[in-house]
Image (cartoon, rainbow, N blue to C red):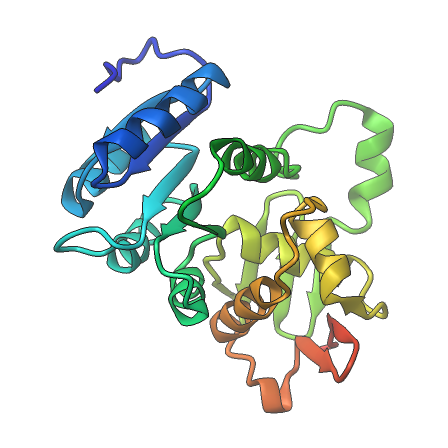
Length: 248
């Protein structure tokens, strides 16, 4: 395990969690070649300990871990980290994939997979703009000042701080959930198709062709906003087209 010290570099950090040593070695090698500092674990409890200690930016997590499976690991991860999670699964059953996403994974890939494809997906996740960072130009700050707070009834979205409150209480969203809400609320009268949301939130990667990805994350976002899909206030379904923002 790499030594985690206060002098650690600014390189992104990854955690690979799988009980197949040969697969771990390959994925670790690709990540290190791409500039990541990489930790690895062969079981869930060890992975959680490492994640708490080293605060990774991205976690490659096998669904079929022995004992504590990947779904439970992911659910626990989401109680203390917003790291990007890519779920690995040896089962092509769509239900397994969607269950993994429902507990907080950002993407999934089915074994056997190309390490290059996995790296392409990770790079896509890591390229997402983080609007909480400093804006370099004063004119850019001025241009965005009027939209820093977006108010939809009891829902308030602070774009620059990447914070959301509902009836005055904070709502904890993952990065992907916030990016979806940010996209929808930026143009509240625009209906976004699932394919357009894939392009905007998942950076248009050609691999992101499964529109179920959008539906699962929208469902999780709605639950956190206490937004019943049948009588939605904030995230509206436009039948046959996609989603748009409601007025609260």
